[in-house]
Length: 216
Image 1 (tube, one colour):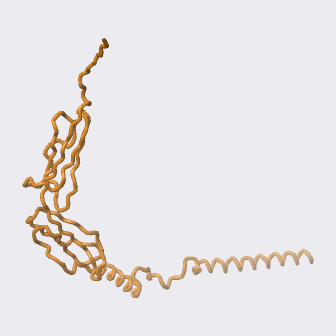
Image 2: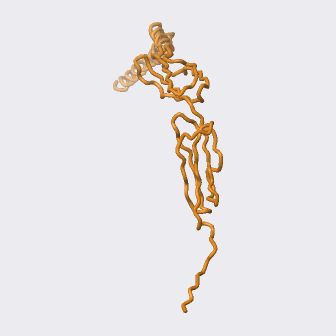
Image 3: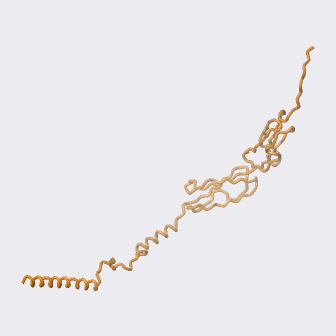
């Protein structure tokens, strides 16, 4: 007779599969995106993620987005609200883009009031579309139109420079008729030169007379 021995070992953590379900609903509990199901072994780590759903904005998360798989199936619920979108564009009078678009979002029927910003080098001209209104399911657009600003400060500066050059402003003209330093001799200097000249002549005459006397 042959004896067969079967040995059993207790289940350890990690030997049993489990799941985590991520649900995506609106504020009324309606499903707006298919569930995501994450499978793993009990004790292993899990991490769920939100979904970017067009026309909706995440409001809150119910349940733990990350943790460990357990014997019971866990449910994580992502709650969204429906939103509207308003895109703001900034162009010049020819339709050229002068600033990056800005996108505003808000809950349906919520009010918005968007003011045009100051853009360096441009002047505001007009608005195409409603600056105030309510968010709706339909995308809305506002266009702020600008034109090149007149550089008044630069014009005034140029005018001032022109006037200065015409009137001589900014240049020292008070000594215009004064010769450069050292180019004119004073009367004392002239007298000194004359004295030295006659002294040399006199000395030469004396030396000549002495020489003639010796020769005689």
